[in-house]
Image 1 (cartoon, helix red, strand yellow):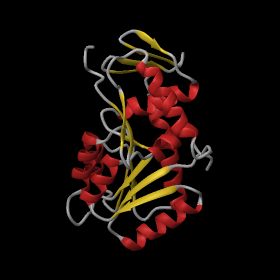
Image 2 (cartoon, helix red, strand yellow; image 1 turned 45 degrees about the horizontal axis):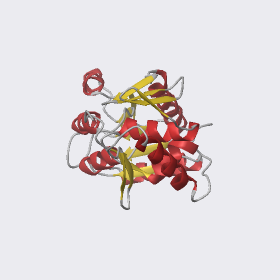
Image 3 (tube, helix red, strand yellow; image 1 turned 180 degrees about the vertical axis):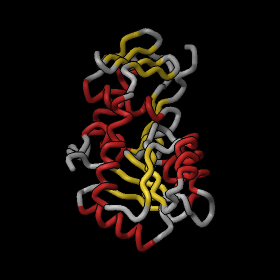
Image 4 (cartoon, helix red, strand yellow; image 1 turned 120 degrees about the vertical axis):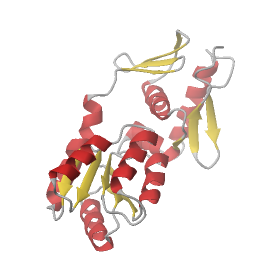
Length: 231
């Protein structure tokens, strides 16, 4: 396994959940865990994950409902792998109709589970748009260019990655840790590096907009704002 993945596991079988977490953490991945559907929805919509592993049989709500809620409210497209003992075709059909991206029945080989997660994590990259438009802000990935109302925003390569992560999450905030993960992947920079880059991004945006487009959320991170305003 070459890529470090961030996984959300929603599973009420604590023994199985521990087994999965132990295995995936053993290959270097980071795991968040929820044993109830509502808790899983809250985590999925508040954080960014590479893959969500979801059980269908949850104590407080059906996994199909959880899948639909996550797909409707998540900040970015996150693949969902349904892991369940239900192996009938009808159950699989309902899962795919609700938005699941893959289906694996219990019991399963955890090595296969990991390989499927790694494959799923590549899917958003295959269908990732080269131009991102959020209101009057436009980012062109191939040219690494940013424009606000058609005006070119001067930014560095790191600055572009920061703006791209913020734009993809808009109108929601992005935590500092998620920003650092999006920009530097598995190689965290010096402690003050993000703060310095955020300062430069803010100054670049101020040169093209009379109103603040970037704001700091105390104890959370950063977010873009007012991108639909015609200024």
